[in-house]
Image 1 (cartoon, rainbow, N blue to C red):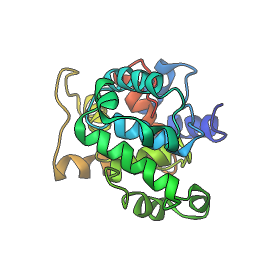
Image 2 (image 1 turned 45 degrees about the horizontal axis):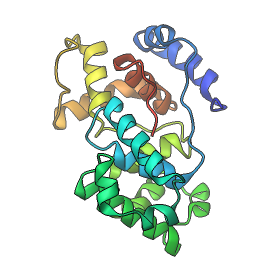
Image 3 (image 1 turned 180 degrees about the vertical axis):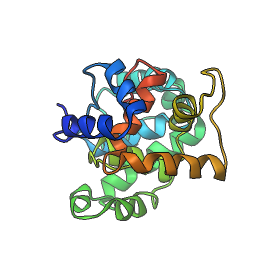
Length: 213
């Protein structure tokens, strides 16, 4: 299901930013696909940390097949060796196990997030082991469908912005450091209040596989 703000955001972004407008046109009718289950969204984000979209999808497919039913109860009962056999590092195994424990105990209560702003949700989520700001921002984008998230720790976003706005070659690594983040913030001012949508199209411009966490 397409987010209700998607078409309006695309029109507004295309008017405000011709460079992004071209990217949107080139990508065609694709759109962000929301994830309805909070646990699955967070687990997918943990799996996808620091690896490519393609690699993350492959690991997730193996993980989901092994689990059969990706729920806090089921994941909490899976053996570490089984999870590592799916391609998760030892650290990520610990993280998904801890995530499952938080959901089972009620320490994470998704119902309360609807009334919180973005920064409050992030503050809540980063209390979970293995959930940093980037993972929390992926949750805001893919589960809560918050429209104005700019994940400055995402190397794919920074690389795409360097390519499209600074003429960097596609083979170049993502720029990093304070200067790169400040440059991204400045460029993204014209994307407000739809920075989530702009970010998704930046990802798509690098990889035809839709980003999905």
